Length: 110
Image (cartoon, rainbow, N blue to C red; front, top):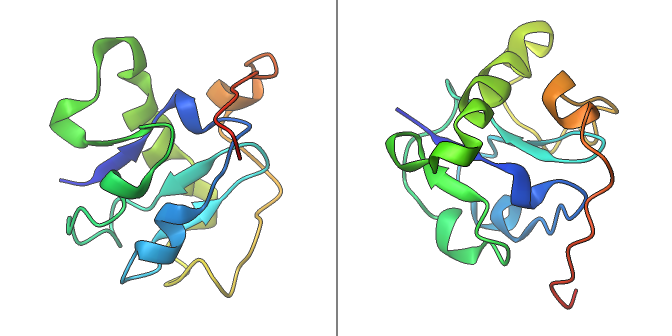
């Protein structure tokens, strides 16, 4: 089991979750953040700090964003398990689901 970052993060990437993650398993794509399913320890520290409520426990992802579980897993197919997001920085890529989205206009006051 793991946490999943869904559509509300796209084009926002606030990164408050990254700062809270004790195991550095939240990786940065070009337009979104992704939680590594094998590195996540299910502590839940990331969920309450997300200003756009984009992070859900795997079993609690709303139906409208269910495909984001698969997107979070598949994002790491090529990347593998680097063992920490901080040393990697922005990967410069996104899952095709995110790439296909039009720009997201989300005003959260950042």
